Image (cartoon, rainbow, N blue to C red; front, side):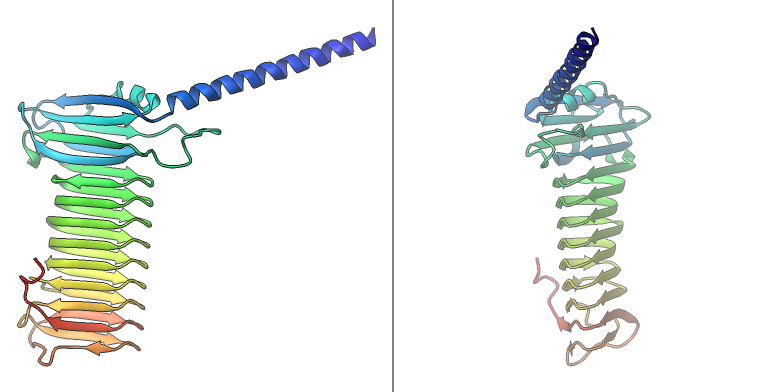
Length: 313
């Protein structure tokens, strides 16, 4: 009798374990199904003119964001891309709330997610139509390892945070902050009160910056083709190359990185340049007057040469 009861307990225990395993496998199959990227989706959010003031995008996908004039007199945002059913279901419940649209293009995180090993390869195209771009107060983008593409983005405050993804911008207007750990930062043109850029190991390249510019790189290189405004530049081991066009003050500090300044301001002021062990090369007749160029390196070389400001166009 005792043996029969024991066998029943073993059978019941085994049955429960089998049911748990079947349930876990079924749940995992379902989650992997709804998490699979690649489902085409288009959606549009609209508001009365001037009522969309804040745009926030958190994404595991690569995004391409472009600002355009409104075609119907309203403020609206249109998304077109390939997403997972899970992400689509989240977006379908979303509305513009308190003058803010917060897009969560995120993949679910769970043990056994076969799609989480790498970032989704699909690009999500987001177009922002504004009746008057002057009403846009903030545009914020946060990505883990995917690329951020921005075109004609205008806002009082623009913020991009990226882990290892590259930040690529065609036209930015407004106070801007660009941060990435290991990705590159590429800016075609920026205009605003202040531009802050930071990358630990990625390269930074700006074709034209109009306004106060501050930048920090760890081991990545920094290149600013045309700097029209005050510059505060710091690098650990990455090289720095800058062409100032109208810079009242230019401060550059590196450890082992080399510094090259193509000086197009022959009468703007004097040089205050020093390197502990690196070589220094200056024009034969440096200008005098109000101090405007301050450069310090530990072991990096410093070169300042005269250039034609139109030569880099």
